[in-house]
Image (cartoon, rainbow, N blue to C red; front, side, top):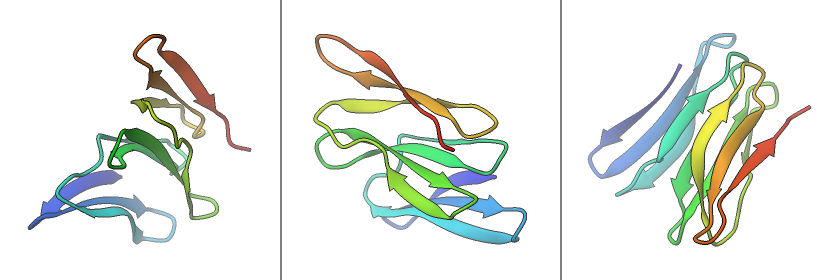
Length: 106
């Protein structure tokens, strides 16, 4: 289970890992939270977050506990879809030519 919440001016995104019965904090930011948060059947998560200039895509891999920023560019990345195994696609919004991007984790 993944969720977002607001505590005062802090925006939190969390993930409950059933196998360890632990809550993993994915984000903790002030004044703005994640744009979207998706969860795969295998426990991986992905979210789109505003970095101050545009939206970027981040992931959490359940098997390793690693949080990774997948994109770092000058266009908005978001509208994420993730399959049961954690592979994901998202839209990269370019003012003249938007694209569908794909990430597959091994």
